[in-house]
Length: 148
Image: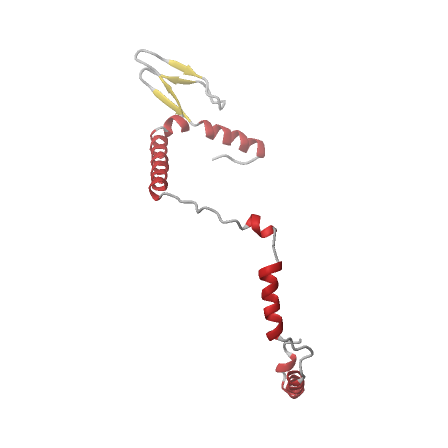
């Protein structure tokens, strides 16, 4: 409301009258800069000894960082990250699946952990099971959600 009051047309004359009076009032205190400034500078140079600034603002040696060393660390970190990505991608089947294999002239009967009937693997055969899918399905059954 204070901001809007001088912008209304019927209040502008009163506003400018008060503004003119305020600008023409002589200041209550006029400092004497010619005398006070040299006294203040003398006080700051001679008698004022800040003790707390000596400890916190002592000159410090600048820390010098060698760009070659930081570049080598960056190169080593990116190489390790790249190798971890490669080995993770190559070994993803051993992480994501449980593999059952049979040799020549071998037949295996396996009871799967998800409760499915017995699985028969014939000679030179393979079967995969996703262990994380089993965990999700058992969680979904407990919560009453249809699993994928």
